Image (cartoon, rainbow, N blue to C red; front, side, top):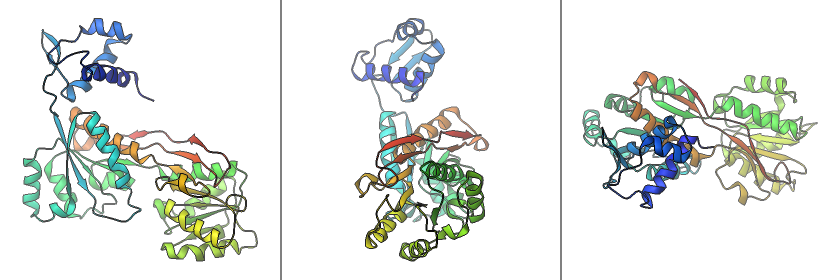
Length: 367
């Protein structure tokens, strides 16, 4: 839900765009405008600050606030694109949110790839980035180790950098602002949801012993705390998609097979669907399926797939807002935030014959 200042910002922005306040005109005095809009002057000023950052208005001391005739973008973001082309790369789903938010906020976006930056020496790369004068950088990359050439270059530019879909460890390793998912909370929420659906024997399919940064031991402990069967036979890993049929075969051959499977990825869920169809096992009547991600077109599977959704479009929009807050507040590198993005379960036919959204996560910021 938008804050009051955001609502007022949109009202004023619409008035400017529709020429209710023509270019060059002076806005009503703050006290009058606040009274008309029925908000405090503090709330109004927050909205005016945002309009000024977007170069839509200009405040002139002792004269008032005027609508600018030149709406040329005041700020510029450099978007560094990730070169991975795998279909499970989340960044193509995040980019539309970055683009729509930048357009709405009148922010110029320039894009380049890691590959293009790599054609120069490190020194020239730093110089060229500075010469183009971006106010902030959004880098579509994660899981930094600390020794990457790109990381050292971005640090040397002195320009604020944000990683929009990163791991918690990236915050400490890079010193950049980070948007990330709270995977421990996501896994617990998924287990609690399935328990609420009546499941006790819940199989889990991960791609490594520490998938999503969570160890087998942690996960089994959470199962025990939540009150579902924590027998390790229900926890399986698959090193590749090709290994999923074997993992499912072993799970369904157990003396007490699972009634639900909770998989760490939508793309795992697709392979599970294919396997169950080959075995004529009905979803959800014989086995419920819940996945994490929610960005593969879950409504187009049959049955539709229940998923813990990240809202990648919203993450892109949040990334632009966050980097601009950093730029305009002139925070130092030591103050770069770590923000946990919200998530929610969208319940579809793979766990229930109905479809509705269950909000279970909120945006949280760690200073």
